Length: 309
Length: 225
Image (tube, rainbow over all chains, first blue to last red; front, side, top):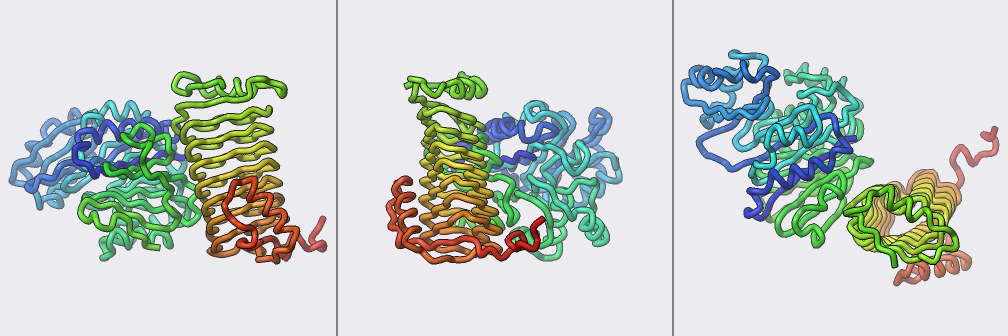
């Protein structure tokens, strides 16, 4: 059991409240996942910068001179904003790959939580309300975000075992369920050169999507083929730069509830997570169909739902 | 009318109060406000009381019900009226997965749609759905009646025993050993009563009946112990 929440805002006036709305949803899902929690928030785009969110178990030492060191290595200015064990590095647009390589050379113990233009991922071990407080998630604004509360079944309770998992630039995945063919798939993906760090099943699911997209698939195609290639139970919520997508396995025993109003599209593992959203009494509330890929995108509002399977 | 506000009443106190109502109670009408998707509301009741839930609920609303009438003015999460013995549960909105699972008796009326596995392993309950039901509904259904005024999803009635399934709309696919059967006069009479009890605006002649072909392993006497 795990808890998933997601909020995609249509009404820009709600953007300053995104962090607080998502945090309340996340804390409501504590019963479903008290081990760890994480959130991916998509903030305002700045055309000149990209962002790396990084984590260290020894942040005092690791982040002390990182801003200057990385700036020197890249030959251009870098800005570091620390939040507890995490730090967000603003990198000149177009230098994300170079920055990751430089970061690995400077300090291989620093882990990259997310990379992209607008996404920031924060995740740690602990109760969701504690994790939210450590990163001051309530104060964050943004266009959309997804979150996860974890009850570990397939691997250790560690920071790297927490969700969301970054699957590509500005893309991330949260998962409720358990994959049963992740060991075989991990070996296959590692032979293909995909970097997988933990024994976690969801990381393999994320790596699978990354691998499919590196080979030319769109996110929608990758999600659709995951229905054939991933064995087990899953409700996936996938964050992208423009919005989020939902897919459930064909058996669909992992719960999912969606609510839509003129102001937002919301996702919760349970209706409880949605009850304090503004106007929920008038929202259209429904369950996403099994084996069907749904997307909501700021980029294309004309087709909010894509049925793929 | 007694009102219990879940904003200031713990769930255990709510259920203990309702469960304490004796058979001959004169407090027969109860209203629950601010359910806000909470789990296990009004479970294990054992008296002829009427409970109205003003809003949507989470998992297992009305589970193990005996005698009571529970009406939810909203939608319900997974496992509504699970293992119901008798009484009536009415859902004004939609129901999530495994509505009425393993129910032994009573009537479950869903005025919206029901999700997957509606009536899984039903053992005598009558389930009347005004809308559609999802995939694997009536899986291993043993006894009772499932009425669907809309459409049914994939694998309806997989591995079914003796339950009767009536569907007005389309059936996406039938599960293993489930077949369409003739609507004989006794089935029309039975369905007429079920539709009336469910408050359905539908004619029994519009429905098709499905049930067990009795061809699976367990129906062969040579496989008996």
